[in-house]
Length: 216
Image 1 (tube, rainbow, N blue to C red):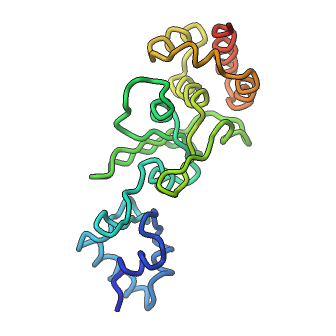
Image 2: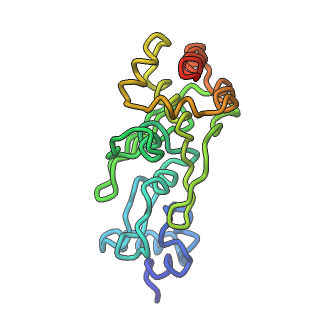
Image 3: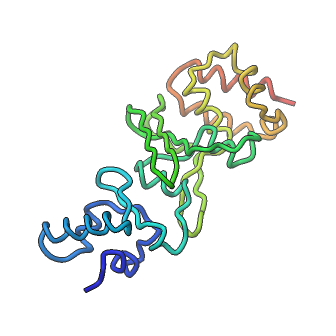
């Protein structure tokens, strides 16, 4: 009889976040038998419980470590990498960010601290319906896809999260040590597209102020 680990690998799921329903479909037998197999794998360290209903094959059973951006997508469906994490990824800020920050749908902030895998935070923002993924791009990490905000979208998400007023925007960008030339190189169409994303007027003012203030 194959172990749960062997079945997960055979199914090609070794590097994926798995739901309880996926594991149940993979395993044969009664609900009690499936429950026993999952719990045995957890006790033996072959399977990690990320949070209720979500699992990941432990490092000993994976071919490659799961990238934290990919893991974040599995932890919170419909989210994308943004804020300081995306800014660091794109090289817009000099500091490495020791946690993975995402924007997620809904209204509740979520934090998950997973030993050996890292700290993950998910923030809701006041965004217009239909524009959630504006200026969000797909990136490939070890043959798996993660959604990452364009650096300007990540910056404006951060401004939105911190509820900055227009009068503070230039000082804030300077404090982040963002090179003004990066902002000057952004096409006008990208700025205009972001005007559609946020619901609050102060965000429209902030975007306009940054765009005009960084014009050559």
